[in-house]
Length: 223
Image 1 (cartoon, one colour):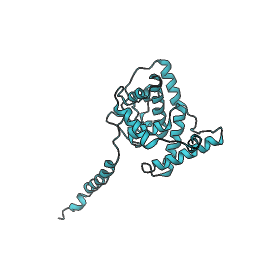
Image 2 (cartoon, one colour):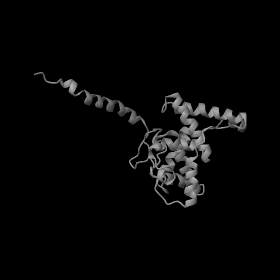
Image 3 (cartoon, helix red, strand yellow):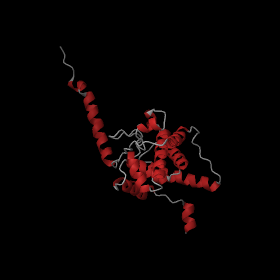
Image 4 (tube, one colour):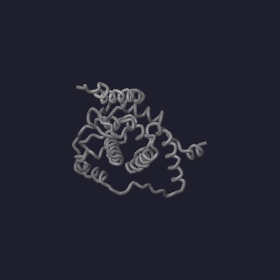
């Protein structure tokens, strides 16, 4: 009788160990994500209906530009942000889709694009399928209960690029309105740590160090 080869029997285990060894340096190189834990708070019916309408808007995410200068500024922004994001998202198509969608959803919610880029870095480090220990999902680490409160109840959509950014931006805008424009408190509420400085400080640090953006036209005008 021939015994099974020990090398064949242990091949799956060796492959698993190899994957872990390769993943370890990458994980060590990534900044720690401070995933969100938005807490359920009862919403007035009018607020819930308004937020649900924003989530359900199915119009295609196409930006229109009234002036050529606005389009030029958008192209400049895309090029600059694409270069900064390339190390985290090396695939060109996925990177451009991400930036176009982020630009659309932040403009739609009346949010600063650079703020949201910083928030995503801190929340998920740009990992589409990130899941926190609290169960928050996706780029903006949205808690699944939101899909029941203002969505269609399908939490799987939080791994979809557009749906995740839509939920995250709508929720952050809601918290900003709730806090009467106080970004410090709104960010704390988004993270489930209202009143504590760690999370707002982390988002602000990422914003200032890696995502601050000044268009060339604005710089030239100021000079």
